[in-house]
Length: 357
Image (cartoon, rainbow, N blue to C red; front, side):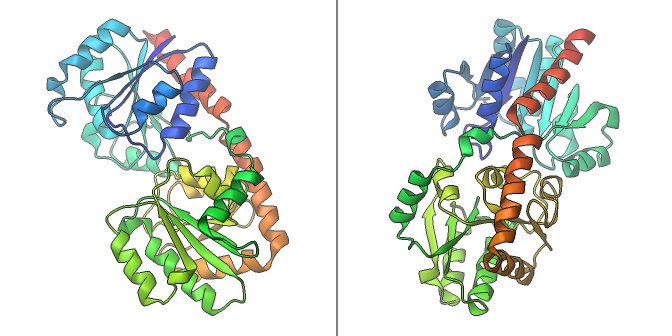
């Protein structure tokens, strides 16, 4: 079975877990070929992992007809199925796949407009929230299924040496608890709410706590200004964007995903849970599929700094509870988001279209 994977991008938040999936498909005797944009980091990672790929930059991104090189890639590789991720890739591959008579399966990772996916043979939504969005755009329910993003839990098993080295590098003392947030610094990600929640926590708790924020983006200066205005500069660490998040996860105690708007999925959340962190997320979008409140993590109300602070206080003061939900979360992720199981789900979908064709 030959699958042509196309992403019209080369710097992906979900890049590492997606590479884990491609490798698992290869182990299951799927012949994979990846097409991605130039620049960024994805091409380098594909090369490191010895995964076959090709660079393709469409001349006019909003005009699929200008991507004649993609037509040649299809002809040369002769795939059984084309599988896309991201809306622009869906539009381009949908256009050329339809003309080549190749079914195009499209993973939907966000809440897109309908026209990007009009030529899809089948949609794989990353969460039930995204599935509801696509059905609301009048895509037929029998042409949509939800397949979660995977994580290879073995890669996230706690490494005490890396954890200690990272804490030392960041100047974290042995008795300090670390609350971790990570992602793009844009308004809807809610890092301002997490900062305010930590201020409330620090004012109302005897815990020795620091906030570790990983990432970069347009809101960075605004967030730094908020930290200064709250007088908690010594309690916040901001190392910037990191390529490998795992050492920072291992160095931390609690992970928070404070999004103000529904997350399409929340890959960093399952990475944190796979690493053994007690995790907190807002009650919207993908996290609802991932967390059972109070069992394998904690859900908080959207845009509520107080709710975040209250949950953090409980987790910090009740170590048995924190350890219990962290362990349950780690076990659930290893089972529910197993890269092997999710690879099998993809193969089932691919096989359906090979039989039809």
